[in-house]
Length: 101
Image (cartoon, rainbow, N blue to C red):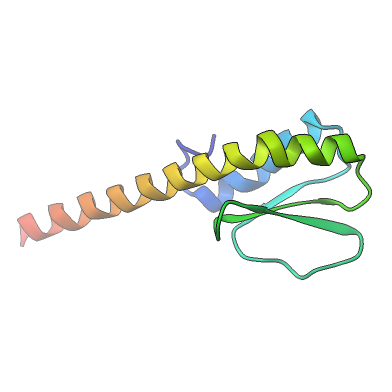
């Protein structure tokens, strides 16, 4: 879902919905920029400066641990790959434009 998306930002909401459903969370959001801290939300960083998984603050500790241990590293790898793909596609477009001019 994330890797093949033409618009990565648009793919974040459906991916977050899948995470929420898989972990029986009331809600989840994937955001690229750090959101405002609120008491009712838990902000879990994805890698280093890749984004945030935002979930309700009152989730069971075992669920939080699974998110941190399994979901966040996977999201980090996917977001890095998606960013690299976007950058490569941008370079291809620039190269084609230069060849035409």
